[in-house]
Every structure is written in structure tokens, then in C-alpha cells.
Amino acid sequence: MGEISNDLVFKICLFGDKNVGKTSLIQKSIQKMFNKETKPPTCIDFAIKKLTMNSFKIALQIWILRSDPQFKFLFPIFTGGVSGGIFMYDITNYSSISNVEKWITTFKEGLSNDRKKIPLLLVGGKLDLHKERVLSRNNAKKISKKYNFLKYFECSSKTGQNIEKIFESLTRSILNHEDYFNKTKQNI
Image 1: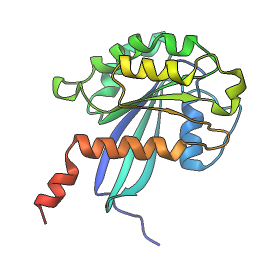
Image 2: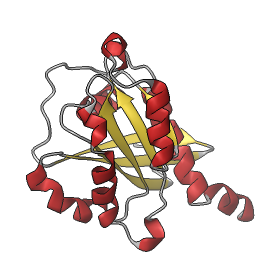
Image 3: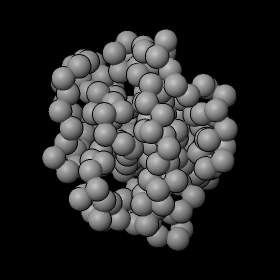
Image 4: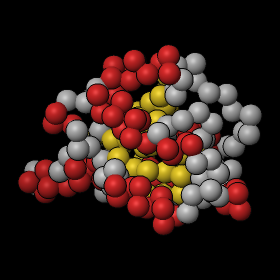
């Protein structure tokens, strides 16, 4: 069977504090596996996720940005040309969401003015540890609204809960934002 060609390619950035589950999220989504001992990327990690939506074959280039302060100066370089983003935090670690404003500011530094309003999702990871939760869903939704995230999700890379919904929602939001649905109708 031959390789599927892609109609569209979107660059996505996944960012947030250390140990919130960014690499695990990608591994579960693409490789369908969970490894509790996942090692963080050295600086940047990169993965491709393929999906089909509304007859579009789409490749998401997912860039995982490492959270160490010594690498933050690189973010503007890697966020150039991005179509969407995911800020991820750990629902069992309040400090992982307390830096949301700094993360968004750093993330947007590399975006051109016409890209400042790209779709961004707020994702709370480690939902399988919900009994250890330190931030309620309601408070997370308030944070999501305050910082203009398009949507809020909670997920578990261990169980797979909501993993695919996150990428489908972000992809659909990018297609809407970029007006691909109307462009397709006009070409028919």
C-alpha cells in the first residue's frame, strides 16, 4: 500500500511546563502507547500526525517545545509559521498552570501580526489522576476564557481519554480559521 499524500500540512506547537505530559500526549496519539518513563526532548521534539477531515488529508507537524528557561529564546524561531497551538498543564500540579501568561507571551513572540489570533487550546493532562486534582474544571475553564483559549480539554495519555478529540478539535478550528471550508465550496 502506498503512502497517503497530504492535501494540507499544518504546523502545531505543544508547549507548557516540565512534566505535564506533552511527550506522552504525542506518543499516545501517534504510536498508541503510554510510557510512564518518557524522557523530555533535548530542546525540540517533532512528530507527524496524519488524519482525514472533511475529505482533506491532513498532516499535523507537531513541535514540542521544551520548557527549560535556557531554551525559551528559541521559541520565536520555532513558532514562526504555526497554524495552532496547545498549552498543556498537569491537573495535579497547580504551578504548571500558574505560568500560563508567560507561556502565551513567549509563544506569541514569534508569530507575525496576522497570526496572533491562531487557534489555541488549553489542555489539562493526567486526567487518570483526577483524585489528585488541584485545579477544578470550573477554574480551568475560567483561565481558558481569561486567556482567550478557543477550547478547554482534559485528557489522559495513559487511558487515551480525549486524546483524539484534542487534535480533531484543533484541526477543525484551524480549517475554520484559515477558511478552508469556504475555499473548497468556491472551487466546486
